[in-house]
Image (cartoon, helix red, strand yellow):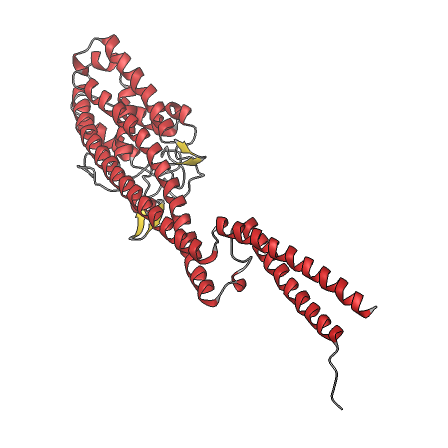
Length: 364
């Protein structure tokens, strides 16, 4: 006896297929909706194809590192810019004093006293400049950027540094100008507590101070980007050990403190002001030269870092484009597909509705 075909069974089978197809379309619609919302193919790398996931895993860390390095360079160059401004102002102070010393022994008593007063004011101004900040960080403090380089700059005229130099200059007499300047240099180069005008972090030998200067990582390696208040960063001052402390900052401060103690009375009693002034002016000239060279090298490094940052930004843009191709979607295409999928799902619902009615009718 031959079997019979049940038309209702066929309709139910078709309905099952439609239900499965509808479920698949709904899942596709969910995925497309998520992609349209986030712009990414999936919410994690596990949702990507293996090759695509590997590309994303390779690119994302590289992009992150480039971003971090650019941020570090931006912070460093900003600090270098503040340092450059301060260095220019300190250079102007030193140059003005250098010009005044050219004929100080030929000035009237009142003019000599005026230059001394100006030197004391400029010493205080210089101390304040050495405490320059960028974003709350002291730019001349090295890696210890939270520590103020010159504590109480507005009181430096009454500090141990200035008082001890004033005491040394008070012994100025006929023929001892050079010896007096050597005494001043010894005080200016001292790191002893109560003598050094600098913080404990900076009251150290130059080699120790420069080991603590700020650095930035670049593709070419570490780049030193700071100058400490108490030590030269890149150059050597002429006369170091004889007519210089080895630090142009210390030498300029010593010159200002020395001239700040001079008075017309010393000139009137025959003190060897001229001999001392000649020593100060010679040392100051070397300090101005060294400051300019250090400033120039800092500028070269600032320019180099800017170029490095630009190159890294270009590389980051290129890698970001590759990453976008790997794990992101074309929003316009996704939206178009999303609309088409919604239409397909609606059509699927209509087919299921029609088939369900037909099957029920047959069954009845």
